[in-house]
Image (cartoon, rainbow, N blue to C red; front, side):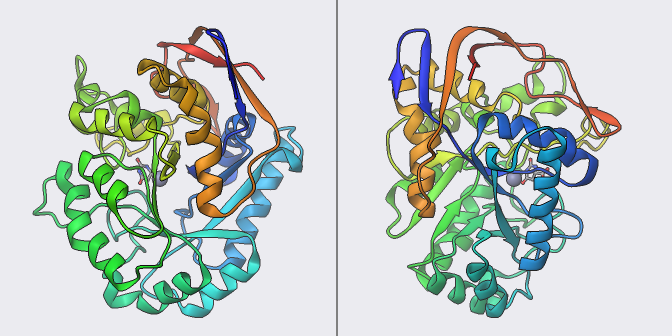
Length: 353
Ligand code: DOR
Ligand code: ZN
């Protein structure tokens, strides 16, 4: 890594949590990620969900076709596929996933927790023990959407309650299971990941590093800041920023970039998800710069993730330059548009190569 006050050169980063969707939306968004990242963990919450190796490989082929359509060669970006865990995922499904070499994790969506989670898990330890046992033996990570769906629990407390009700019992039953606590949003989550014994890590989004829940209500309701897990109080943002910039290997970059059309966001019942693939590294650099820790960005973005997943570090470099970069108002997406997070605002860093 090299830093001057105006230029930052890091090993080419990876995005360890990404939604690319499918069809015409995939065609529209894939280049935004491939321009900045060498690889990404591709979320499986399509309709229908990616529940088998065959579906994952077919989806990977469509991603490669979309890259080609966007004028980017196959070597420019590697999609790391995942399976969507259901109550019916078998040990054989897991074994096949591991043996395929194409699947790098299995995503847990508690049923009803978020976008396309209806087919998710209803009772993790009750229904998925055989799959979890197989994942533990195979060294295939469980990627966790860590929120309870109990309607009696306040929306802002769903992650903290998940730790007590699901994470702790899960890790007691499967102590050697590799677990990634995805899109961590709370101080409780940070403390849990820091202190847990065994192979536990977490991804952190750029939006949870840059914004607290006030952003949702700045002068009116702001649907483009709505995601799940929802933005939290300032104390939680500060805990996340501290974790991401601490140099601790357990925290790494995962954008959770989740494109929804402008019309589905600016809606009486708007979809959850922030589109950050366009300007992901600009957003992360801005967050790290805000606490004077650009020197820790490379570990978070390019080193900690591969170490946890047991993959090689990338060969290429990414160069960011200080300067005013204005985020576009919207971008074409399929037959509609997508509004990038913080559209119209300016950032102090820009990816230049
Ligand atoms: O905000 C979110 N959007 N959170 C999720 O968990 C899913 C994602 C999506 O797929 O839109
Ligand atoms: Zn996600």
